[in-house]
Image (cartoon, rainbow, N blue to C red; front, side, top):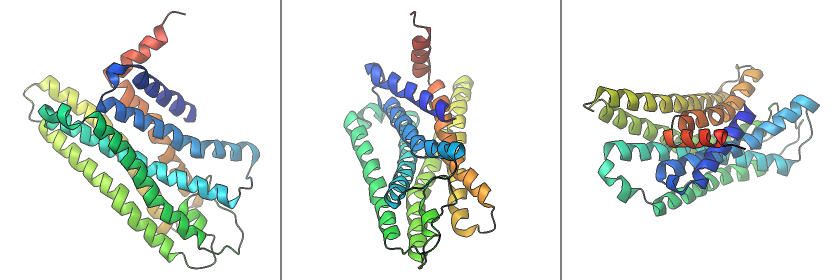
Length: 278
């Protein structure tokens, strides 16, 4: 799955960057998503594979905090890119006459900077809250990567503030993203059902349906993992670890297929690269 994610997202980025005709909002957002997916996988999966091959290995506290920062920051930016893509589709389908004037290159650049700034601003306090904790017990994280509550639960002093901040930040960022994405696709589907052509309705519904499935998988696994880490003491550890890895690995593997292969221009470019004579 890791190799598929890296190769698939790498192809999407190469196609979008290499063809100036694809330097449009929809394709630029696809490239952003592909880059984020590659980074998100690479932050966690290689270490998990090392654990499989060599067994548990020591990790310094600064390295663990660094990994935690990038895991949560990249997850937040993934959610933000999915929201931007949903908004892009909403403008394209529901208000097509305003698409070219509203979604300009300048706006895309600002969106890219904003999602990076949001991720850093939200995750940094979580790292600082970890630094205030005192660790006096066995420092073994029962997980394949370092994440906020996994580290916090090793502390000897109270982690109530860490838990409250993490819950509040998640609800106000990814939770709000999910609500806005759902609203966008509801408005899109309402517009699609009003199209006069049955063929156009079927095609649009198939595309939106695939997007909605990927989004539901991403947020369902993420929220389940997030809440069980805080309130699911009865959930077996291996289930928590499996779900925590799946929500970081399944969407990056599926996104190039759902968003890339199903997009005609990208599909044709990839096929052209594969069929190019040597």
